Length: 576
Image 1: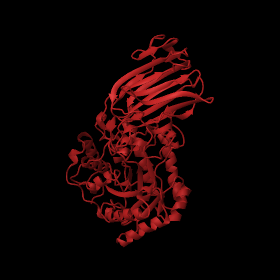
Image 2: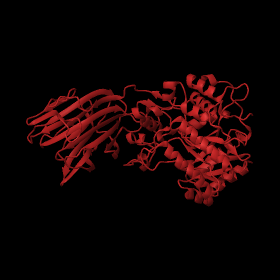
Image 3: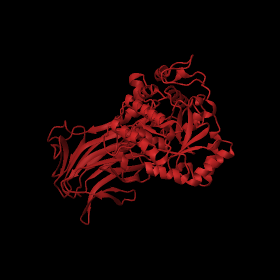
Image 4: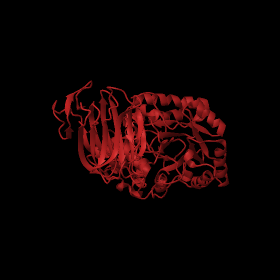
């Protein structure tokens, strides 16, 4: 097979750039010719050409699965929709049901659009501030004998999850003011301030009628509250509520207080037997899941393969999950008529199983290693990455099973977040080389150029410590989408976000990503004694949730008909 180069194509075949352009404009249909045969033994290319791999993490299983639901909800907010993969659907074009800052309200008047009531000695009115720009609503209750202030706002009835947010404060905390989300006349969520034995607290009412403390609160202090209310979770789960205060989850999957057919109102109220001043601001209600990112069709996988091949991606390193729904994309790849255009290999972690499960999964994987489109390096050695759970016994088992199947000795690459950690692990388990999964910034809003300079220095650090290295090419890191909707696959219930969610890098331009890939290839070519496998690994094909991707996006195709990132890396010379 002719060598595929960045600036030329074999006679009779379109150039890579032409293929990318056609694929972007037609959704890949124009590429539906006969697939190219796989190179013998999956070695992919001539030895003069550095192999380019890209990590795949296939959580885009659609709304009917808990994992897919989480991906949908993280990418639903407007500020993250530019990350949506090209096959995404916008299921709710206008997800904002209520967005009220009160800044345009008339000072001293009741808030427009809200239903309000005020008993003796009480009032509900728009006020300036206080102690913040703009306006808010003051719910003043000066009576302890039946006076009560309320304000409510209806919205279009929702049978799927909604996210409700508001800011509030009491001048004297613990006054039994309340916020309720309702379904008709049925209260579904009830959150209150209270004072118990001198402790001022924010609490929620449980289905048993008891009050559960979320946290303590202070006088004259603003708190930002977010409530996710899901009446119809996937996989037939029980309806639940999550409650966050100032970005920290204080209640996880709390049962509804009543049966909800549809959610349709938010209400605030004071207590009829206590006097208080409650300020309310920035009230919003949004459909939590307004996109559907579902990659589980053969047509979509076929398009992905063609996009990757056209850009010069030699193999995908699949994060290997042995069970549904996370096997679906790998299964679709293996059943694709185009699978020989892009090879594949496995990235293993604890999901690969232990004991008998490990043995059974390994038997399946080794059988795949024998196939021509499983990526090989160094004259036929199957390539395997291990990012977690590596032990000497496991590595020995991988080698033994491969030998028993008549395969060359697998080339095992382990990862570590520091050079010495990775080198020590390599020695302990008997691996062949080291790498990383991604480069993660150590502060906020780091320029992408700073991220790449740091990662470039790691290539030599890892080589010095461990001898053999597979350089990584990080295309971005920004997991802030988990602030709006924490990942459902993490430890549950987690009360805080993962620590690295506050560390993120600014978005890269396509040209910056291409330059970083070129640097990695050039480093590999000038350090072949320490990069014998002659491959680099891109983070990632589709880690869109964490901010690292080269897979075409809906934004790219809708706005320009181009695939900017793939176009850029297609032009990188693979020979250094």
